[in-house]
Picture 1 (cartoon, rainbow, N blue to C red):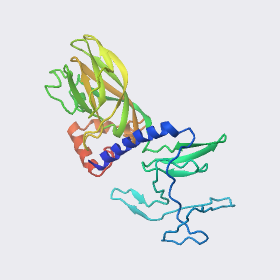
Picture 2 (cartoon, helix red, strand yellow):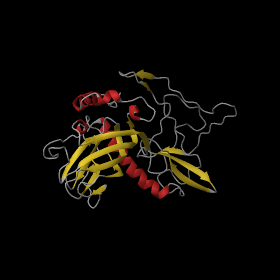
Picture 3 (cartoon, one colour):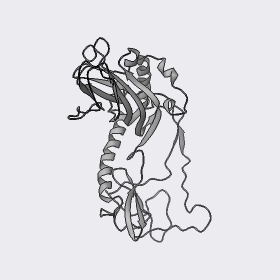
Picture 4 (cartoon, rainbow, N blue to C red):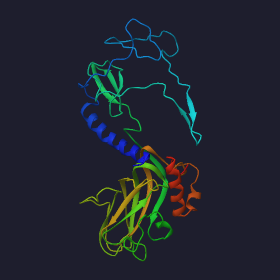
Amino acid sequence: MSENEDKTVNRRRLLRRAGTVAAGVAGTAVVGATAAAPAQAAPGDPLILGTGNLAGPNTTALVGNGTGATLQLTSTNETTDSDGTVLARPALQLTPSGDLLHPDSPGGSVGMDTYGNLQVVAAYGGGKYLEYVHTSGNSNQIVPVSPQRVIDTRSAASRARILNKSSTTLDSSGRLRDGQTIHVDLSDFVYFGDALFGNLTVTTAVASGFVQIFPYGTPRPANFSNINYLTNQVVANSFMSGVGYLNDEATDVISIYAARTTHIIIDVVAFVVGVGAVNPGILPFAASATARGAESAEERRAKRAAKAQAGTPSWK
């Protein structure tokens, strides 16, 4: 499993775990768990740099009465990566411990659980409540984009993002065949996205049927459809779908199933991202991504493959 794939899988595992925990405690009174280990500081003695300082059951307080910050931490250790990125050493490390902060934690307490979630104890109205700090590891955001045409099976050029084009999946005019599933690469638009919002249009259907859109790598859902259509009907519907991972060349892929042969047109209007990112060239008011369209699908995939080895988004 690649570093980026592992990162995304772990993040989604975090989402599931954080959602379960939050449902039981966020916005409610803090519930019990193993208390975090005491801070390192010797009672009554000065802190000694470079060594462990045991505080035991005592709390070390630092009180300031000036106008500046009471505590400032800085790490000046920096290195530059091969692509010019400046890598800084952390100024503060919270050691993960326990599943939840202990219920006797005072308001303002901050900790990190063993799943990597930052937790904060809020105190108000006479009660204490456990909250989670939203990060790219346990939350995501919707990013609107300038509407983009992803595929249009009526045109050979607009079928370039279909990964499994063949006479089995597409008929002679490019329509998605009865009972077949195509896989569509979104890597031109998003890098390790979680979901997309878009518009699905079907046209020139040979018979009444339906279309399903779902994340690549997941089972095709039963008793579900994004759109239903009649013979030769032109009909459109908005949709949201999760995004799956194929490999480092196609990091973001959706699957599309048609019950009866029909042309498929898909436009995207927004992505949901957490650890991933959206191609800045398709953001509203951003520079046009016209140059990307001049390349063939094979050239784009070759570039993405090279950049995936370095762990960088394909459009950088």
